[in-house]
Length: 413
Image 1 (cartoon, one colour):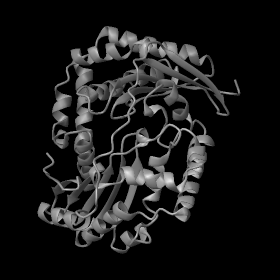
Image 2 (cartoon, one colour; image 1 turned 90 degrees about the vertical axis):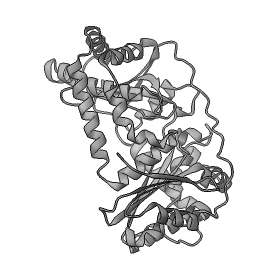
Image 3 (spheres, one colour; image 1 turned 120 degrees about the vertical axis):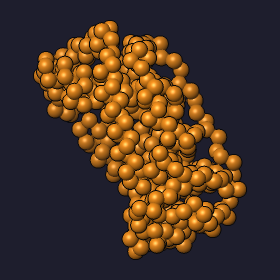
């Protein structure tokens, strides 16, 4: 169990504190409730751009990294469809430096033509290297607009088009910052060798006077129900064919989310999973099969990645995989199989709680999902899943009309 105290400042900033006196370090995590899903369809990539801009310096801090390194700290960040997360660890004796640095970039980030141009070039280079020039790098750029037609999950966090960032103006960037990077849209989580009273005192000192507006309204267009199978075939300069299948599923906070996690693990989550055992090891139809969830807060995707062993008809390979899944479901999910994936999930929970940084990130995510106490109920949610209920979830999920299939083919064929 992760013990913590929760506070809300008058400006709307939420603070969660977990004390662990067995470490000399403190983890400081700031999660802003803004991701790529909050972007305008014609101005995508801004959330990820800010992941970089937030390290460009602020009014009283010329170099965020240099200041933190002076006191023995380290930090990083990541962007998702729904939130952007900034995390650091710092020795407890220097913890106030972390508070000072985070507050200064929340209050007065140095956004100017120079910083924008530097980070714009970094992001554009990342877009080219990881998504355009890397083999299979544009999988999400192809799949997402196939699976989603209305909601803003239809582009990846890097953005839908690199020209959106290339043409971004300083005014547009300032507007994005003022709208989303404010206390009422943020969660501050502290974990480590600091008590709640001291954490609250430092939070009030460094964040309490930052002005805030009401949380920005989410203009989230709901995704219409998918009525028919969608397919797309693309030809690229890649060595072999692959396929990526995606079925619609509920979002991260849905009560059934853990059931989908177990189903993904059961089908293609490891060496003893069904598709790996049947189609990779036994029939050798595939060299790789991997099942994973896209993890969006609202409308998620249950994804299956397939790589055939022998060059041939990728379409028939996908048909065989789908038939194998249906046959498996028709025979029923056994208690033994369910117990195995449950144990793996519970082990994963235990392992994820070994470090203070992970605890801080997990607390922030739970708060953003609407209930910080869910962090201590996670194991119970897994344990309550029965084989018959998981069977029902699977039967409802694997309907052809809810599936989108990307056939990613080699031009060499």
